[in-house]
Amino acid sequence: MIYAEILAGGSGKRFGDTNLPKQFQMLGNKPIIIHTLEQFIINPKFDKIIVCLPQEWITYTEDLISKYILNPEDIKLVIGGATRNDTIMNGCKYIEENYGLNDNDIIVTHDAVRPFVNQRIINDNINAMKKYDATDTAIDATDTIINIEKDGIISSIPDRSKIFLGQTPQSFKIKKLMDLFNSLTTEEKDILTDACKIFTLKGEKVKVVAGETFNIKITTVFDLSIANAILKVRDHD
Amino acid sequence: MISQCYRLYAPKKFRIDLVEEHLSEDDVVVKPTYLSICAADLRYFSGNRNIETLNKKLPMALIHEAVGEVIYDPRGKIKKGTKVVMIPNTPVETDKIVKENYLRSSKFKSSGIDGFMRSIVCMSRERVIEYKKVDDRIAAMFELLSVSMNALEHFTSYSHNRKQVLGIWGCGNVGFCTALVLKYTFPNAKIIVFGTNMTKLSYFSFADEVYTVDNVPKGLTIDHAFECVGGTNAEDAINQIIDLINPQGSISLLGVSENRVGINTRMVLEKGLTLLGNSRSGYEDFKAAIDFLERFPKAKEYMGTIITEIININNFTDIGPAFEKSLHNDFKTVMKWNL
Image (cartoon, rainbow over all chains, first blue to last red; front, side, top):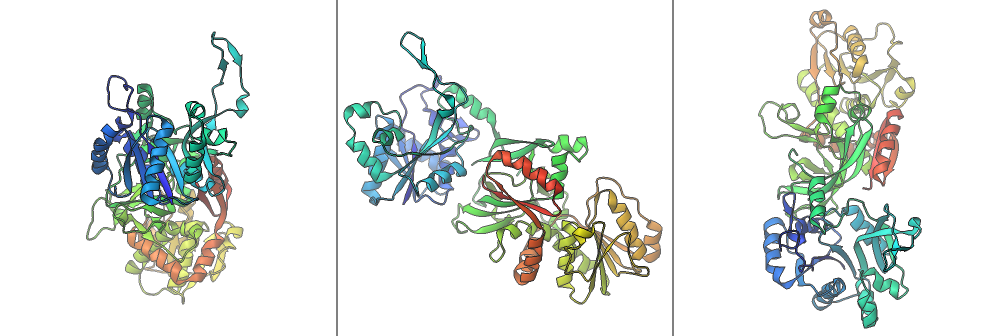
């Protein structure tokens, strides 16, 4: 089975002058999360789509889905966790409890606030999972990455040819992901900023597929302005 | 539904636009798979349209010859993976007399509205037709064939019944398809193709005779003619047809010309000729094109011979070079659309 997991767990921070979480902000004519969900709904390879959300936004999201999505039967809403990886794990546990788990079951996780993901990236992720247990999505770094010491002085500048910018989707064999996560120490879990790190910490291979520069993450009001500026509404088809 | 739309914004310049497409229950989502480049696309690409037209129509996604796979049907009726041809003509009304492709209100993809160079296309379910027995690369040329089907229907309705010798002017893609359709529709007729390029005329192996226009045997006459030349040579072609055609014959015009064409109307009058205008195609013509290739396996083989090149489009940057190559290819350039 192939599952999609849309990560919309964040709710704590204000987004500009509003408390409406960023995944529910309007992009063009629909909330961001709806655009993102649509790309997974139309992909014929997914069996179920799990959306992980803060508990207080579940009913709200149900309303959005019934308003905008024509066939919502395969979408399941699950309560997220305190951290990104807890949220991913909640989705995995939901799958285990409701559908059972096989060794080859795959989860394609994706940020709810990356609405410009396309079918090529999603399919590249799924195809890479035929050979690998984990897949990440990345693009070339165009800015230079610098390491800075505490006093504001550059300590090193990594070779840019080896630096890439991680995006999502990130895809995993669900059983392996859960096993590896559960084997981590508390200290190891504390330094996790990314689900792929669960694999790299344990010396496991993570395949990388090409992302797109337009697959941006909308995390600030400025990002949303950019997203709305680059999205054109078709008015003539 | 957000799609990536690969638009020409100036001659030879493409860009990616992110476009919010409207998806209703009447639509299906199609992933384009094979896109065939047409001479009309190349005119935009090369900037061979007048500046007013370019300013009015660009930016615009090119390509109106395309097939794809249905990846999503909100009603769940069309199976995922169903192979379909997409009809570029988009009527907004129906008329008891006028065909959909001649209604002035109809829109046409890649001429005024975006064509099929997109990551996904939300198509009305009434504007896609399933095909099964035709290779995708050849199916990408259904639109081209449907244009010949449209002309055939017009011809059979408005021409007299003496159809012993049919002449086709033009040795390009439209001439090839039209000659092929005529060959199978009128198996007892003599099919003669007139062109300027003997190498390209060599592809017309199914024709009874082929001639370069400067080497037509004296005394040769035809009952009906099909002009598939267009451009600046259309004038010479039509006037040669008027000279060779028998009285009360029909001349089906299919060639697109940017400029007005001067023709010998005195002889049109004296011979009582009928000029039939043909442009684009509609739903029924696509059905006829699919039926034609599914019914005649050899016609499928012939269509395969005019695919000059298949180019994989894996990245946005592959698009421009594919169009450049198409400018120099004898016949069709088909893009395998992996975006």
